[in-house]
Image (tube, rainbow, N blue to C red; front, side):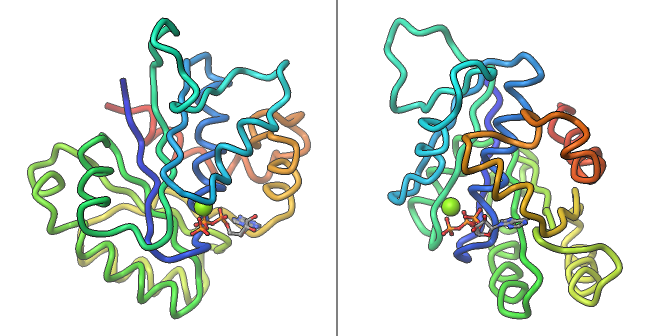
Length: 204
Ligand SMILES: Nc1ncnc2c1ncn2[C@@H]1O[C@H](COP(=O)(O)OP(=O)(O)OP(=O)(O)O)[C@@H](O)[C@H]1O
Ligand SMILES: [Mg+2]
């Protein structure tokens, strides 16, 4: 089972938004998807519970029964403040880690420390787990994007996407939906921004 961890200890950086949309993409591409919600706030689990039954199914790992079929992939949403043993546990599960970063100076600084820490983890250094970064609520060719890119270049980490700020994510989430559950014309601009990120998710 492929496992994607979404992590950034900085609160509100976009972890849950990214997690549910990645889960929605994988489910819509015909995979059996489970979501593991490590956050006590349980926002991702609530989203799954709100999800209309006629959409491609996503289960929470907690709700699975022993005789349920195995999943093809697991998306792990993690809480703010993730560090130490909990971070090590989450990393052990993951084949890929995606770090959403928001554009403020404070978010960039906090995320920089986390990315540095990640890059020094043994599991990452050994190449057992790949890391990518997503600029959340961020546009390319802005000051924040340039600052982020300069830092990522030093660490040799890729930027996978810039996802702009839009109510499309917020409104879809209210209904238990991802971008990939919407009529394509409603999310055309957003879907374009996901192309490279989806290629990265799909490659081995
Ligand atoms: N691209 C976007 N456009 C508009 N709003 C966004 C976008 N990404 C995230 N948001 C909003 O920003 C807020 C924080 O996002 P989210 O809950 O995904 O962050 P988080 O990292 O999971 O937060 P926490 O650390 O509290 O778990 C939410 O209200 C979400 O709807
Ligand atoms: Mg969250």
